[in-house]
Image (cartoon, rainbow, N blue to C red; front, side, top):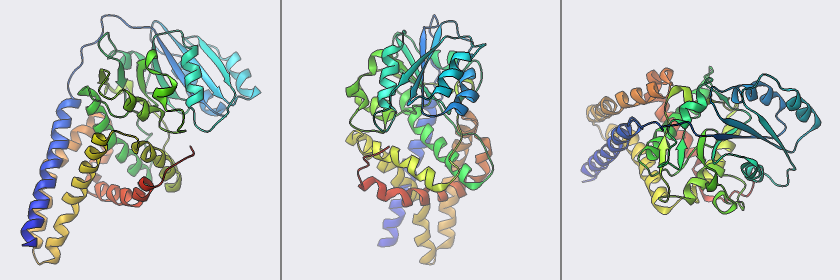
Length: 357
């Protein structure tokens, strides 16, 4: 009896996996009509003791091929070196509005809100000091999805490719999360975003929407506040990507992900259930056949894995090609196992309330 129960569990997990992957891929690939004109926009950059990062990335953020935009730099806890460096910065195509914000609490929400108040345009693009756009068409590619009917545009913020399994794992998780987040935004029901690369109307940013009582989750909690109330779009053009460096140690990466897990506790119940079902179906489809091996049915287990990968692997290849993560394709089966093990290690974080950044 238990044997057929496991067969039913695997079949159910496989159906859910096909639904998540193939339906999502159709949505994420749906084209969006560009606006009739390019809208004026303010790029908000939050920084904290990040002069070296600003020296590397701010010229690219302020050197976009876009007709009407400004860069608002919110220096959260400024020092004299950063102030002097910004004042001497030359050769930028956009004006840089410098905001010396006195840091009063952990997190960047107060600085972000102050920068939004100072911005002169009705559309904002949010990013960080450690982010570098793919090129000079980043802003035009992202804002091509902004029009009178759209309130928020979700972009992709990949990590820079380096050698090593930790970097592969970080980029693999970012790729999987992006498929879920971007496809939800493309369908008009965004539940999260990456604050390093998102555009929205200025009117959306206010203390209640940002949840100022929590030091983390400025991106996800902002989207959650307007869940089902605004129109969203996704931008997957390679020129719209914003790159940043991944963490160098697993402990640092786990702490970074801990902020996202803490924010997910404040999602709607429907979104939490949706994510739980997705991850449970992934784990079930991967590990249910192990019981068949233990009960003397290795051929059945192997057939189940082959059938699943025959259906899922090509779809992941298409996703990774779209998101410029092609080097992950040969490692997909192994990366899935590492990813699920990583989630199992991080699971206890969901049961503790995080009160710090």
